[in-house]
Length: 416
Image (cartoon, rainbow, N blue to C red; front, top):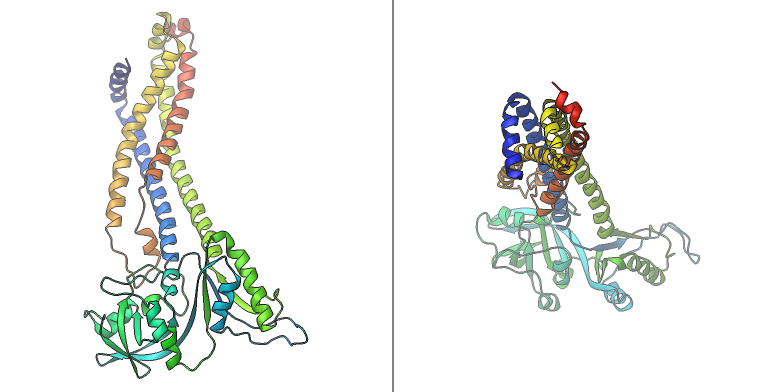
């Protein structure tokens, strides 16, 4: 019965080719718009999470500051520095810490293969890799505990450092000279997206064991402490305890927020994620409104169909057709129009998204194109699309259908 209704309406649909073609195009354009906007919005959110994690995931970074309050007779404006002993001091007293690592850095000339460049050299420990997404390329590795313990002169370098010094050669196993001291390259950073950083992108950095770094740098203090909490919900508690413990150790007011500089990337990621989610929802709404224009056209067409087929409806009702049969007929006819328009929009959107994703990302000059070149055609996107289309099918068909089912059979048979 339903197939018969569809074939019947298809014949009627052909009689209105011009108007039907415009409505079909409107539905095609609306479905294409909503799918592309949803895909690009979701892709931007996904790319943000990837690029932000280039700095590290669930990371709290602490560096020294300057006091802004008087404390126990001591003046304000005192410089607060961090020292290597603070690592064990905090680790023993804050059980919510999962990983903790020191970091010191300085800028020195680096040379190899008769080439010399100036780069920032970092001294740290093995835990740093897990916290700061330092993934080595095939055949290399990051610093390990033995490197730090024995003060080995080894270095893990960013991929741009490797290209600048060695070109297309494999840097692993080669010697580089840092501040006139030879180091052996043990690994090269795998290319990654990164839009949050300090001292420049990781691609331009060189990492050495902290014990080896102290042999070529005279500073006693450390520049930064990296902390990874056991759970993200512990991050506010860790911040408070760090202020309290270091305030007691270095004699400053624990409520003085200028005494220490704390960068909580967990909070930053949540805030930025909410912004991108809002953009994603906004783009989806814009796409839905575009599709709504096509749905209005379908509704108008169905009202026109009712006027043209009043006698047919009257005959069916006079022969005993129930209201639900009339309603079912018009809902099916509305569905037929939507399927014809949205199917090609779905196919076109899928192919456009696939083609865009084939465009390579420039890791060295990551910009807005990095967010736009990775739209996501996910199951979630498809379900949202189906829900929106289903809602519009129902809304476009139900009002004309109810109106048709309420026609008086006698008045309908007299209609010319």
